[in-house]
Length: 68
Image 1 (cartoon, one colour):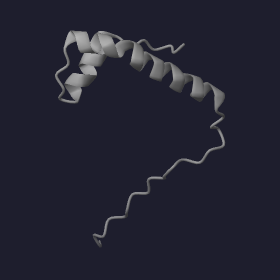
Image 2: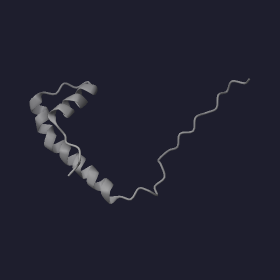
Image 3: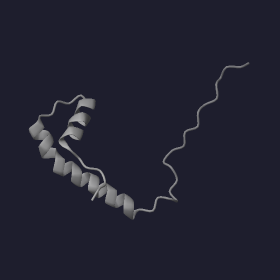
Image 4: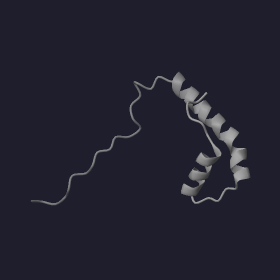
């Protein structure tokens, strides 16, 4: 079980940030589904050893083309 709990309020806040209008009823319907997804992701993370995995990308800012 995930240490994080999905609530109607957390779903409503995420919907607001995404510009969506969800009814309380629809948010309530999504709670168990999203909690299952979160629990599954947490379980996968616990089972994987990612300590030796290289990052998908490395940020290397470009040097300024301005000459002094």
